[in-house]
Amino acid sequence: MIFGRRKKIHIDTLIDKDMIIRGDTNVSGGVRLDGKIYGNFKVSNIDNSGMIVMGSESLVKGNILSNHIIIDGKVIGNIKSSEYIEINSNAEIHGDIEYNNIEIHAGAKVIGSLKKMNQKEIGKVLKDEQDQNN
Image (cartoon, rainbow, N blue to C red; front, side, top):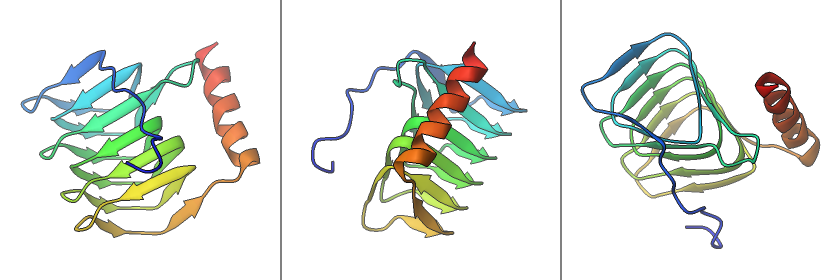
């Protein structure tokens, strides 16, 4: 954990290891993903508490957007987080990552570019998210 930035994890939704979702998925709150999603995956909340926790056997083939993201599985697509991303040692990412704060553990595989978002870009992500929720 970097400088105590990780939020307390609150899970509202569980996508179990036997579940496969095909198509874009939009949810709010905290999500634990142990299954597979073939499509874009967006987790949001107006109060900036959207969180994804990906287990070691999880897979997302599509883009991910959330405030807070913890990855221990595989992502084939781009990732954008307005707050915090933690990439654990078992994670494998094939895509570009845009972040505010990031922590990458030894052993993690990232094949793509990393881009730190500036405050203007973070504000735009949050505004777009809020507009979509209204």
